[in-house]
Length: 95
Image 1 (cartoon, rainbow, N blue to C red):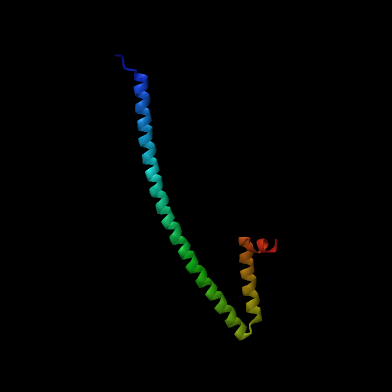
Image 2: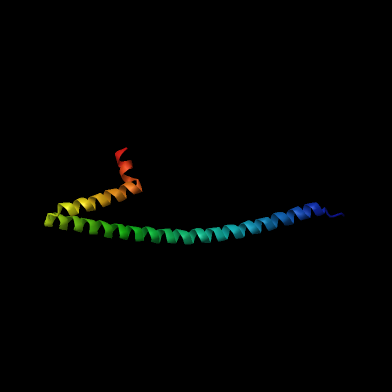
């Protein structure tokens, strides 16, 4: 009985390709899991930073209103609106 070496080579190639793709899939899943944890941590940190910034701005504006500092409040609002315009939030609100 003669061995069909082409078929044997084809079967070996399929098995090795399957093993390689399995290794790639395992590493990809590990990497996705790690970056998912990093993304969750970054989102939590952004939430904390957002809360602190909101509290700071609210307290600053209340202090300015109590002291009746119109020029300072105008400059701060100009800076805040400039930042929002640079991020493209104000044009989105207008349209």
